[in-house]
Structures are given as C-alpha cells and as structure tokens.
Amino acid sequence: MKEQLTIDILQSMLPYLNQGQSKQLQVVLDKVLLAYDVVISEGADTEDNLNYVEMFISAKRIEGCSEKTIKYYESTILAMLDSLDKCVRYISTDDIRGYLTEYHHKKGSSKVTIDNIRRILSSFFTWLEDEDYIIKSPVRRIRKIKTGSSVKETYTDEEIEAMRDHCNTIRDLAIIELLASTGMRIGEMILLNRSDIDFNERECVVLGKGNKERIVYFDARTKIHLQKYLASRKDDNPSLFVSLNKPNHRVTISGIESRLRKLGKVLGISKVHPHKFRRTLATMAIDKGMPIEQLQQLLGHKRIDTTLQYAMVKQSNVKIAHRKYIG
Image (cartoon, rainbow, N blue to C red):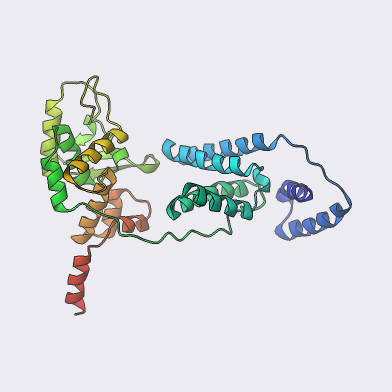
C-alpha cells in the first residue's frame, strides 16, 4: 500500500521534478511513511485501465495502424490487464515477466508469439511513460526474446505449375497468377477493384500496411488470365475478385485461404497459403540478382531488414557461389 502511495505521489510530481529530485522525494517518502498505516480505496483500477487502453488505441489509430492491428493490440493488452488485475501504475517488471512465462506454459505458444506479446506490451507501457501516466515502463528491462531463425519454405516451379494445372475455376487461376507474379499481400489483393488494374502498363495500385499506396506489377500471363476471368463475369460488382455464387460478394481472406488449402491437399503440397507466394517471389528475385532496395519497394516494406527475412537464398546457389569465388 505504501509503495503504491509513493508511486502515485511521484507520478503526480513528474511534470515538476527532474530525475534527481524525484529520487530524493522517493527517499523522503519511504522514511516518512514508515510511521503510518496506509489504506487505499479500491474500485477505480479497472476503470482507469480501460481509459488508458482506450487512449492508447486512439493514438495508434491516429498513427494509421490498420483495424486488424488495432484489434490485436487491444485484445493482447486487455488479456494482460485481466490476468494481472492491477492498475497499470503499479504493474512491475516481475509482473510482466511472470505473465509472459505463465502465458507460454498455459498456451504452449511459440517464442515468436511470446515476443510479439512483449513487443505490444512494450509499446503500450512506453506510450504511458511518454505521456507521463506512469513513471517508467516495466517492460523496459525485458529484452527481446530469442526466437531463432528457420528457413521458411517457398514453392518450387513444379508446385506452382501443378496448382495452375489443377485449378477448377478461371477465377482461382487468376488469383494464383496475380499472387505469384506480384508478391502482394492477400489483404491487399482482396481490396482491389476492377478499376485499379491497368492492363496496358500491367500494373495496379494496392493499399498496403499503414494505408500506404504502392504500385505492383504483373506479367503477361497474369494479364491474359485476369482478362479472361473478368470477361466471364456476369455481375456488376466493382471488386476484382468475387465469390463464385450469387450474389457474388467480394472475396474474403479466409475464403481464399480455404481454397488454396484444399488445392494443396489434393496435390500433396504442404503448407499452401497465400503468403507463401510472396516469400517465393522475394526469394526468386534475390536469386536472379534483383537489388534488395528495389525488392523492398516492390514488397512495400518499411525496413529493409523485413525484406531480408523474406528473401531466402537457395542453398544450391550458395554452393555455386562458393565454387566460383572461393573453391
């Protein structure tokens, strides 16, 4: 109780004291409060926490975060607050470490998931610190969790050809061609309208993360299949891709993922999903000598480190390069 009272007083004095003065005030409060019993009224913590979360989410929305990202942030933070059942002003580093450890054991989550939670909580508490709602972020001393690195799979040329040959509809074939030739995100593809496609230049404008527009390019084969698909349409929906059955709504991410999983199961191809086309394109581009800066722009990455994570160099080419330059 005394510790919480000290924190509240120090928090209130933040705008008026420098770091040295704040430390001295804490020493004085610790000595003075030894002679007193402190009782803190309950009931306001939950409401305060919800207000803090609401303000943080509003700040993220203003920064341009997508609604999907915002919902993930909100659910992650609320789950932590519900588990700890403490006002954010009193949450300590040990509380966060304990929460992450318990979450890992209970859920059996991967280290990548736990580090994502740590990163979100760090963003939340750092914002509270910057806005002077708390003295110091309790996540500051929790370092990034080492997740290790693994070479993620890409499609082989044979696998992509097999998927092309076994598509049951012209729409699905057009989707595969567009994903394979542009490397766009599935979330970007489902938002495309017919009017976004420039067949003359073989390009289209997509709305990426952070509501940022960029141009992506497709090849001649994709152009042909897209034109065939659009020519076969009888509806007046402006969406580029729509459901196969009436009333022909815009396709969804889950719908496309489901179709690709079924196709992969029929062909015996493991882990068939839309994002794998993006990784395959990045790897192929690097493999053929595309400058990493140009690939970064093509994929719409803010940081080049992200692009490098997508671009997995083929081991066979490493062997050839070794023989050429070293052996």
